[in-house]
Structure formats: structure tokens, C-alpha cells
Image (cartoon, rainbow, N blue to C red; front, side):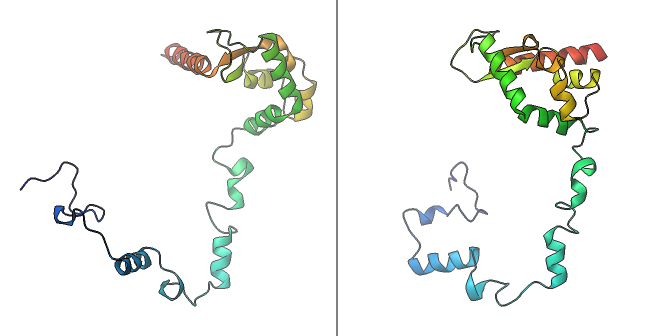
Length: 179
């Protein structure tokens, strides 16, 4: 007997060759649907309710994944206070103005491949995190006052592809420096 490539007899989705051209009746389709997606009296939780303890456990007070301990300094993604500050700087109106000024300076053209009309990103020549560290910036107010952050010549316009290539090249340079 020849078995078609990709045929899996165990899978419920693949019917044996004898099913070719045949269809389930409406009654059978309804029964299969009730088994897969029970509702009403067929649902296992029909007529039952969570206890107060179960509701508290689900709500997040004691839930490990949604609890308060996953926020701020207790979050596994927390990097000594720098990440939230950088995010706040990037979302600030002054940063958005700086970004538009850099794009305007470069005439909305990628400075690497000279493309126009594509998705453009502003690349920091001196990285934002480096400027934050060097100037001991720990609040948004200090960032707004710092002159080094808002120098237009510190930014250059790159398209998405060139920005990705630049980041990749920089990572390779860092790897070879550490070896």
C-alpha cells in the first residue's frame, strides 16, 4: 500500500485515504464541537464557583508571574536603574525634537546607503547609555539639563538595514577585542 508523503495516521486532522471526498454530518460536527469547546451544562465548571482563597491566588497578590515582586528593582530585566531612565528620555518631547532635528539635518536620507523614503532611525554616535554614565545622570530632570545629550551632531540618520548592519559590526568588534 502506498502512503502519501506527510500522512500521519495518529493525527486526528489526517483522515485515512478511504475518507477522501466524504464529509461529517451536521450532527457529528456539532458533537465534535461540543467535545472541543464545551459550553453550558457540558462545561466542567458549570454551576461551580471559585472560593475566596482561589480568587486571591489567581488575582496576582500571591501569583508569582503577575505579583508585585516582578516590578522595578525586583524584575529580572532591571539593569541598575538605567533602562527605565533611558526609556523615559526616549519618550520625552525634547528627545523627539532632537530626533527630528537630526533627521532634518541629514535631509531624511540614510547616511550610509543614501536611501530615501524608507524607515529611518537616528543612531547615536556616542551611545546614550555612555552619555548617561559619564554625566552621572540619574533623573529625567538632569537629563533635560545635560547639554551632551542634545547635541545634534551626536546623531546620524540610518535606514533600518544599515542600522542593523552597524550594530552587528559593532558586536563583532567587541567580541574580537575581548579575545
